Length: 302
Image 1 (spheres, helix red, strand yellow):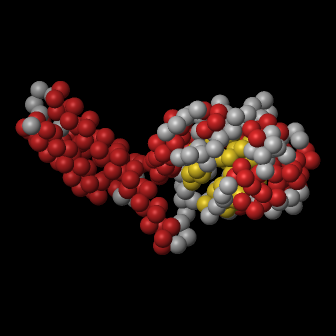
Image 2 (spheres, helix red, strand yellow; image 1 turned 120 degrees about the vertical axis):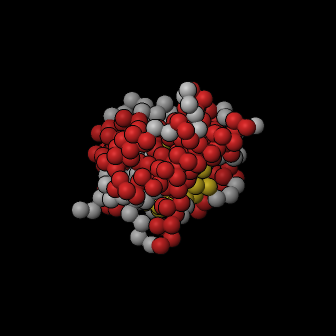
Image 3 (cartoon, rainbow, N blue to C red; image 1 turned 60 degrees about the vertical axis):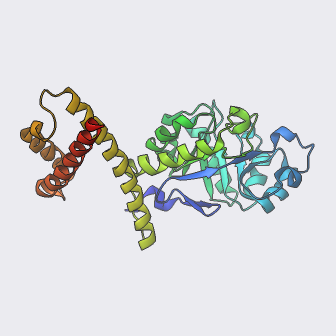
């Protein structure tokens, strides 16, 4: 059966949204704060990824300089502008008004598609409602972005909820003072840190929770790299917890190993990884446990 993600994939600035791993899109530019008093080309200056117009007059510049046009949360009821934006031929990112239902949000995306542009992506921003994000993704079959510019701490939760990508203001990003997110709304200055947090979220949480079906050797290696990054993070955390255990046990170190507990641990893991099975997992976990114990001993000698 063809998956929802395979049926609906949109390319934005070279990033495939809705296919394979979650992505990070740096920067959402809104022309609304200029209120039409500054030429759109002058306001943009250079190529941008996501751009929201103030009016139809901004659309030619967006067509020339943007990778996608944003139907901003503040003007989703301006149907003539929605139709004009969809008619550019660029991917369309449809934000949700805070009061809009899933049906209204998905319906507006369908309206853009009815204009002859099926490159439509949904975007949840502002005060993120991750339940609505998940429901819209399931109901529409379209990719869904989460704009975490206001609160980058929600990046991991958004990926866990099924977001196909994260929008962050990024270093020097220009945000939106009246829409669903962006540096202007959040007032955050550390855009580089926000991008790193988003990248960690799509790498680590995505590796654990997001199914992938790589079609090429390069894609397969990239997927393995994400899984390995998640493994390294979890192994480091396990080693730290093992060090705490050594301090709490009456008999620490290798002499304090509980072989019965280790066998039970491997059996539980084998239930989650039946293809590896207990014998292979036992060898892996023995190496992991020994590495943690060696590390605990080294730290104790310092």
